Length: 184
Length: 143
Image (cartoon, rainbow over all chains, first blue to last red):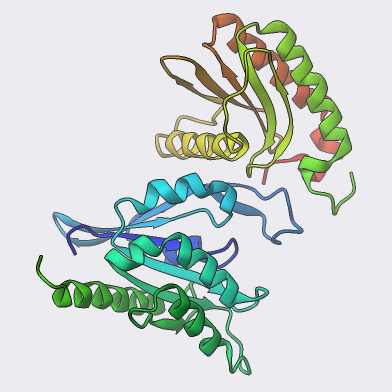
């Protein structure tokens, strides 16, 4: 990984801020604002700038974790934050209407990061009985990135162990792409 | 306020915000556009002057991001609470000012700002905060 910048994208309420808090070795820098439209999402606050956390890999090496706002009215931050990123985590909640459509939407918005680096999808709030959800999400990801498979995980964004497993998969995806790249 | 109506469509908030922006426009000759927006980036109302507003429809969300990034910096440095964020460009300036303890901001674009404009924005934001009594409306308090 030439630069260790990982983006967390996905709709509001998917668990991006929670995931970064679960992973970060430092106190997360957050830009939460009061959620004034509870019909849109029933939570007290929402990210309007970014979340920032770090994982220490050594004295001079860190993985920088950036969470982007979930709503498209903040898409100017999407453009800014994806410039340096080499990895993408798309999070979506299984309880949201049409999670596969949301995956398609957010993966499309950050497709340049997924193509030059790596991508994994995390699905939160998965319940027993959601039997075809995984297939729908895999198909949605394939529609955006047809040239390779995209790993999909069911997970709890609050659980550091599960989030680290997701991140290791992302790092493996990035390194595989680098290893398989045809020299120019 | 109807508990289901989002804050940016609350008639009482819109009416008070309209009155506040009218005052600001009257006091600030270099004002290009002023807006009251929610903390999470929804436009409540705006006023545009004859100088012409910038051609960008994301002013409310940009203001939301700016004040939140300011908050994060002020919090990290233990400097208290954020009252406003100001950015000066070579051809104009942007001011984002909190409206008391309400989840609202006043954002104004000047060409460029003068000392009078900054003072007027402070007074108008304070007047709007007083007009929207937080003790009567829980939804009008910042989370």
